[in-house]
Image (cartoon, rainbow, N blue to C red; front, side, top):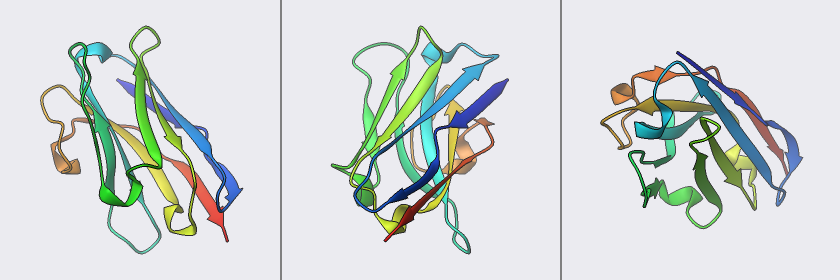
Amino acid sequence: VQLQASGGGLVQAGASLRLSCATSGFTFKYYTMAWFRQAPGKEREFVGSITGGGVPNRTHYTDSVKGRFTISRDNAKNTVFLQMNSLKPEDTAVYYCAADISFFGTDGRQYKYWGPGTQVTVSS
């Protein structure tokens, strides 16, 4: 099983970034995919998730990113995306993608598969 996040970088406040998480080794279309982030000195934080198993996919976001971030998935490419708009300095963190076949909530401990993160830095 592999999950590889990419697309991070250094941007100014107000800019946009699109993160991707390419996966392999499991039946992607059935899995809930989630994004978490961890800022220096802080605990890992749930960002959002998107269910698998067929349409319509349900999405869930933490309050601080609602209206700015959008999760989507491409089952043909086994990839999940995180579109981040109107970025703020407080969005600065390492972003991780995670997967689980049965869980779609906010508790990272429930997700079975994780990948290495990608750094997002937002300057003011």
